[in-house]
Structures are given as structure tokens and as C-alpha cells.
Length: 147
Image (cartoon, one colour):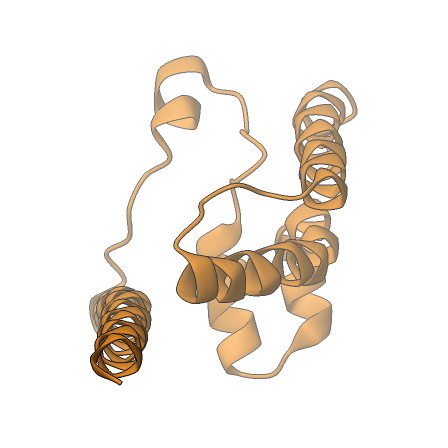
């Protein structure tokens, strides 16, 4: 009788501990997302009212456009729901963003559930395809003067 009670007590503690870790990881993800959202909105407001934006360090040093050049214009266009302007600002990232979301949402869900930061093989494959696509776009946009 006492053994059953001890076993149930241990199971209850394990469940409580797992629930605590689940809540802690969920809070960490939500807090990070909220900080990034607030910082992005603050930057967007600053840019909108003052016209002062960040300069791409790669373009500043080399004079070449990196694969991320145009992200600010793309995000501002998306906030206005102007998808054509967002595509013209950075076509590669505009097309890659949904794939990256498809990768990172299950990744974050797996982290919250298990605490593991390991990506599955399909996620790694899609991520490397996106990275390759962005690097090739960065090369092609400078050779052929693409937007």
C-alpha cells in the first residue's frame, strides 16, 4: 500500500516538473517573440517618422548588396499589405519566408514539448535549400543588378 502511494507521488512530481518546464519554455519563446515584435515596431515607427534607417554593413563596406538588403523596405511594404512592393524589395526572402516559417514553427513546438533543440532531417534539408537559394540570389543580384 505504501509502495503504491510512493510510486503515485513520484509520478505526480514528475508530471508537475514536466508541466513547469513546458510553461517555462513557452514563456521564454513568447517573451522573446514579444521583445522582437516591440523592437521591430519601434524601428518601423522611427523609420516612418524620421526617415532614419539602419545601413547594411555589407553594402557600406563593399558596395555590394547582401541577400538581406531590402528587408526593411519589404517589412514596411508588408505592414501596408503591399505585396508587390514587398516582393520587389527582396524577392528571395519574400519567397523564402513561408518556408522558413514552416521550418521554425514545428521546431519551436518541439522545443516547447521536449526541450530539444535538434531539428529533424527534413527541416535541415529545407533550411539548407533556403540558405543556398539566398546565397545564390545574393551573387546573382550583384552580377545582373537585380533588386
